[in-house]
Structures are given as structure tokens and as C-alpha cells.
Image (tube, one colour):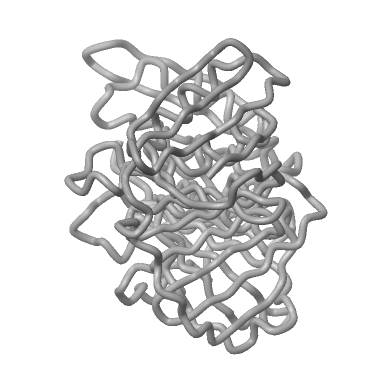
Length: 372
């Protein structure tokens, strides 16, 4: 195998591959990227047995072939090469090595046979549809902060993507929760998605998927089965197993009867929470919200480190309310707001609080209060 490829294209392909590779694994071949060269293209494939990514890029192929080489080492080499360099990869199957040449730089790396590289089995997908990159980015970006990190509740370690009934008809919906906060984001249902089974997309896959979604106008081909999900652009295909478990009935957690309405500038609110939380104890991170007519007082009282208080002008016309929250959860939710105003709907100091952006109900968040 011999091919030449422009450094920027190679770096993009190899960086996508090496981020999928598990740093600590007991199977040597899983640390490698499979390079396949044929015609006018080269493809770079990496897997951890749960996720597989294939990045196809234009290359000058002198001799077709395939081999595998350490993904991390190749990435480090390409990253350190000068911009605009033309990189030549030449495999010598007799010696089991591949040379990487660019200008006066020359590297020789050990390879492993391509036959040992595990390729993810093809699935029959029950739903295939196209979605705009900007829509998918919004669905996953706004929900992923609420993914649980608790391994015992493995079915919460991802984003639940499914078709749901909403006020405006059927929607493509993403939900994530860790039991303390919940994010529910809706987008118009793409054509062909109506029969999609609900799947839990793992946290690592959500992170890898984000790299495919930077171009707003790009159409992403989405394929879903009971066990796998695939996202594809013309150049990159990301295939992942889904979490084998049942996502809980999240609708029971979303409060319907909260009537006390607070409207506040989201950015001012986030900055104020961040400031007063500076003195909160690392363990509880508790901040108290005291609401009175058109004013909100945020306060923290940590006996070990000190106290802080800040007042904000807000729109609130209900009876006085004092309620406590984890400052980190409040900040994460406030930072999801793209519009100016965040609307909080309260019931009592012990009940879950609902937050949305203005009058928009396509993105809603729930946060559990805490005693302060």
C-alpha cells in the first residue's frame, strides 16, 4: 500500500479515529486505526467494539492495500508536521512496518495485520431518515449535560432519542436525566422517522457525534435499529451500539401544576449564581433563592468559608418563596438558554422546578430542589 495525502485532511481523519480508541485496552489491535486505500480515496476506521467510526478522504493512491497502525502515535506524528505538508504512507508487508514521510521527516511504525481488525457487523435498520446537523446539534447539546455518570443506573448513561407526541404533533425528542435534573428537547420529526424505535445513545457516542455536526446546512443520514444507531455525512460514518435497557417514564417527573412564575435575564442570573457560589462549600454547593415581588435574592451561607448575597430585579408577582438548589445544576440549566429570558415555574420549596426559554416549550428543564 502506498498513498499520499494532504496533512490537514489526514489530521482530521486520524483525530476522529484516535478519539474513539480506548487508551487502556487489553486487545492490541483495538489501539490501531485500519487504513484502507483504493481508487482515489483512503478510509480510516477505528473501533472500541461499541463505537465504530469511518472517515473517508481523498488521497493519491499509488498502490491499493490496507493495514493497521497505532492511532494515537500516527495522530501525534501528523499533528506535529508542518501545515500544508504532503504526507506519504508506505506499507511494507514483508517487514510489518509502515513509513510516514513528509518533507525531511521520516517515521517507521509497527503494523498489525488488517485481518485481525474487528469490523462492526452490519445491521438491518428499521428507520432511515435525514436530519439537519443544526437540529441534531441542538437536541444533543442541550440535553447531554443531564446524562448520569452513575454506572449502577446504566440506562441513564446516555440520551434517550425517540419519537414523542407533543402539542404540535409528533416530534423527534431527546431526553437525559440523572435523577437530580432533567432535559427534554424537541425538534420537528424528519420524514421517515415515524417508525423509529426509541434508543438510548451512550455518552461517548454523543461526544463523538458532536464532531460531525458543525456544518449547519449539512444533512445527516440517521439509521436506527433496536440495537444500533448510525449517523453519516458524505465523509464520516459513526456507528454505535445503543444502551440495552429501558429508559424510565420521564413524563411523571415533569411538573404540570407549577403556577409561581419567575422571569429573569438568563445571563444575569447565571453570572449572579456563579458569583455567590464562589463561597459555597465544595460538597453541597447550595444556593438559596428568596423570591418576593419583582426581586430575587440569591444567597449562600457556608459556615466554613463565608457568606454571599446578591439581589436581582426580576418579574415575579406571586407570594414569597424560599427555595434551595445545587449551584452547579442551576448554572448548567441557565447556560442552555439561547434567548434573553429564562422562565422558572415553582410550586413549593420541596417540589421540582420547571425552566424553559421564554414561552418556548420545545426545550424544558426540570431541577430538584435541596434543603438549605
